[in-house]
Image 1 (cartoon, one colour):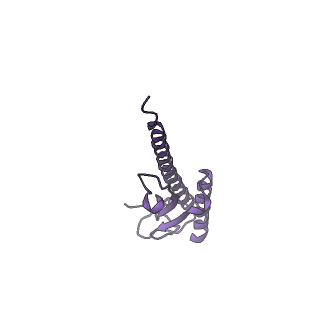
Image 2: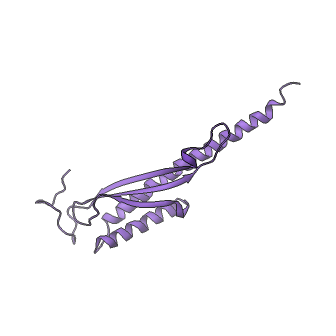
Image 3: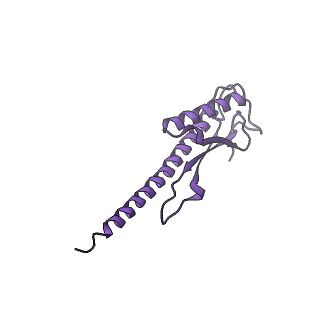
Length: 147
C-alpha cells in the first residue's frame, strides 16, 4: 500500500521538466527567427534598387519585419542592427544582426536562466554583386571582389 505519496512528487517533476523543455524550445525558435530575419535583411539590402543607402536600409528592415512576422514571433521584442559600413556599392560587404529577447520561466529547483530573459542573436553577411549594373564602382582598382 505504500508509495502512493510519491505520485504527486513525480507529477511535479514531470511538470517542471516539461516547462523546462518548453522554455528551451522558445529559445531555439527565437534563434531560428533571428537568423532568418538577419538573412532576409541582408538579402534585401544587397538586392535593393536603391537609389540611396537609406532606401536599401528601409527595405532591409521591412524584410526583417516580414521574416519575424512569418515566424509568428512577438513583434516588439526584436531589433535590427548593422555591423560595419553600410554601402550600396559593388563588392561592399554588409552585415545585419537581429536580436530577439525571449522571456524564460522561473522553475522550482532550477531557477531562471539569464535573469529571466535570454537574447537570441542571428547574424548574416552578404556581398553586393560585383557585376551589378546601376551601382557605384567599388573602392579599389578592380571590379572583382577580394577576400
